[in-house]
Each structure stands twice: as structure tokens, then as C-alpha cells.
Image (cartoon, rainbow, N blue to C red):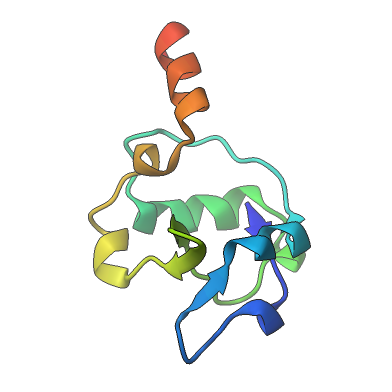
Length: 98
């Protein structure tokens, strides 16, 4: 779970450039079921992270080309956490039967 300064968000384009990752701050790791919907992940993040560290409202981002774009509400209810795992993590999960 990462947070980054809102000054890097381009409202007019509804994106942030990938370089923004360098300015992000890690809030930590959370463990969740890979089959969990992204919309359900929001509750898990609130349960597992310190409330003081989380903004009241937050969005999920996905990398598209050279930018990070917002995952839309409809996509949050359709996409699963496993769709956002990096490839190297996925292979480790299969190896260890997670």
C-alpha cells in the first residue's frame, strides 16, 4: 500500500506519471486472499493499516503505458487482487501453493 502527494495527480488527464512512484511512501504490506475483489480490498486496507496513515478517500491505480490511471468504480467490483500481482510474485505463489 503506497501513498503519494496529490500534487503529482493530473486532474485534467486523470493520471499520474510512473515517475511518481519515486515520490510515494509505503504504508506497509497487507495480506489478503487473491480472489478478493478490489472493492473488498478497500475494507481490508482500512482494517490492516493505521487509520492515521490513510486518507479518508483513496483510489486504486493501475499502470497503463507510462502512467498510473484510476481504477473505475465498476472495475473495482469486477477485478480481483490477483489481477494486480507482479509476475514474479505470481510465480512464487504457484510454486508454494498459495
